[in-house]
Image (cartoon, rainbow, N blue to C red; front, side, top):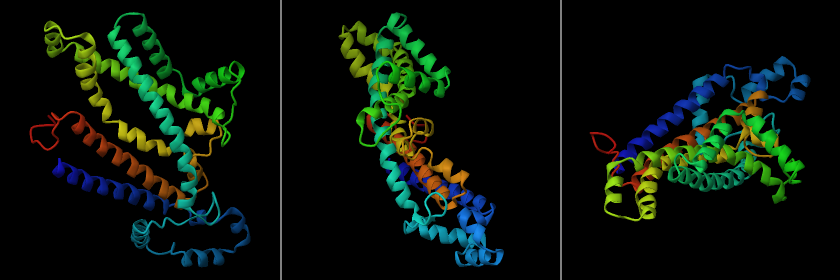
Length: 315
């Protein structure tokens, strides 16, 4: 496990640096005027622009700029925003937004796991019956209908029938109900779908048939054997799901006017705020890669039979 962890850690570092290097160099192909606010460009002559770019080091060789950027990463100096928030540190912008996205993401993730797994277990236990059919209809509906349509239905029902606020307001917990429901519905369907699938597969295996033949209680078989083994594949994605909640939800946060991370990268790209784009890409890359790495470790902890160091495979 230690050997595997070191190997994956090195691979992760290489992957992160490849991603940030490609993004950094691609951004340097765009006009350098993106580092100035629009009102500044109107007041500056071409000579003044070149002078400012030279002072900022943006006229240096791209690889010189790249190594300088690597140095800034190690000192956690990600520069200043030039468009979204004039001369405000990028870390400050992200620091004010990610707690909001994290709070919504964690709550919706907890709800999704609990309800999704319970629904999947119920479907597996009552395979072919009404509860299984109802869960399947819900899963198909959520996965087939465009998210914006689902959000519109939730908003219409929540505001007109339940009288809930249509927009999020900081400090008002009631206004967070509809966004959390919107974030949770799709994930509930996903967890239910995969929990049912893995549990049905486990129920058809020989060791379960043997346990039934020995007279073990059905509840014991379901909890100690079927659900435990069925949860192992799902556990691989839990760390990534948790970490990526920091990134927020673009559609939900825009729909309910939530000041989180969801739209930060999109807004930065549209306004060509390169320093914010670089930092967001670096953050998302690290979160995704670390999430996958921790997922593999969690699988080994839950199921000791899994060995990622063996030459013959993962088991």
